[in-house]
Length: 254
Length: 290
Image 1 (tube, chains in turn orange, yellow):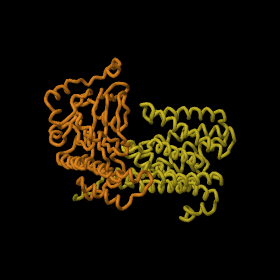
Image 2 (cartoon, each protein chain N blue to C red):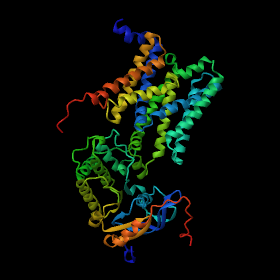
Image 3 (cartoon, rainbow over the protein chains, first blue to last red):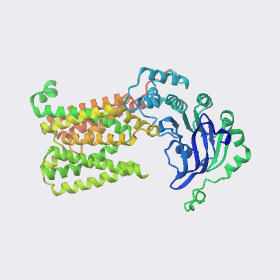
Image 4 (cartoon, each protein chain N blue to C red):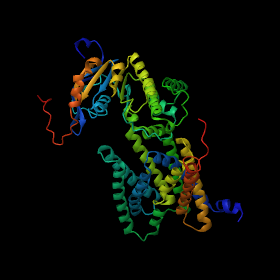
């Protein structure tokens, strides 16, 4: 994010981006960029705009202000795991069928699922530790097993950019470790991974870069630099304010 | 009465019974899978709303062209589609949920329909539109019902995958840039089409019964979308067959007889079906080893 990285490819570049709902900012004046192949944790208190940021990055939400560039990335090139997926977990569909959705770019609405694609789906299930679960209905899975299924689906999506919104919340330690291994594997494959997380030890151990926000950006850079006590203290001070009579923000006008 | 006379002879003997049976088969094939998708999308009551929404269109068609099948069907189709599109638009553009916008628009449509019907309240032909005339299905009606069933199955075969994804994980479809809204409207169009097919046979008030009751019952027998659809169609056809016989032997109106048989199958399914029924809950079999 300094000047020395000019040679590296930028995946998302944000200049003075404000994202929010009903004109109220949830992410306020964020400037910076996510480099190709970087592995970044986004941390901050609840209501600090982390999920909003991911929605902005993938394009589900347009910036209220500022510029957000995706540098040629199409929606299909970004795998996105929402925090609370609107998935109907009682839906009568099998694990295998769910994972196969990851082939969307290859099969779309109409093209057939070939034997190769099916074999890749089986391999993805093995990779997330669900060997032999293909025929099980998803309704029979535990929360952790279901999260593994969603990771298997993202493996098949084979996207250069992966966005994860609190992927390990309410997931046991074993599953978290297995899925973190998948994240590390993606990083090794030079994919860009951005994950919203709460467990700071987990971040320190596994994520080279961190963005700390609390509606306003607080620090963005190497994890050791960002997760210092004074930054964390600052993040806690920022209120989760929704002011009905908030004034129009003048900062971007000057 | 021997079984042949009870179960088969009426159809051998009378052409109107054969026509009614064919109409039931066509309706079952179309309504089965559409009903299952409605249930899976948690839109069971939307079918009901749309069936009422069809009314003013059919009534206006009747006033313009008399008892013309084509005009009344077209009118019903347009009215149903208008309600579906307007409610869908409100739900997608404003924060209001689709169940509320559907309720609003179908009530407007229904009131309009009742207003139009009441100005011609004594007309017997119009009563047939409301309560169905499956025992008087003519060639044109039969062709319409069969065409709609065929078209429904072809469209479902083409967009089935998209409908299932849109229903199971709409967020994923949005994230990969799939045509979620287009699929949703295509599906609502299928619902309206099949309700229009049903109102000739069963009347606007009963048409939705053959769509929802078998689909709701199928949930207690099958566990995959394809088997649910097949089970639902089979139940619908069984209800049609049994209902026609009941109305023939007991001289009852055919539409309610068919729907009541479907209702009976639903209650039996809730009580004794192999998946999640009252029986499996209160009289469980012994648990497995793993």
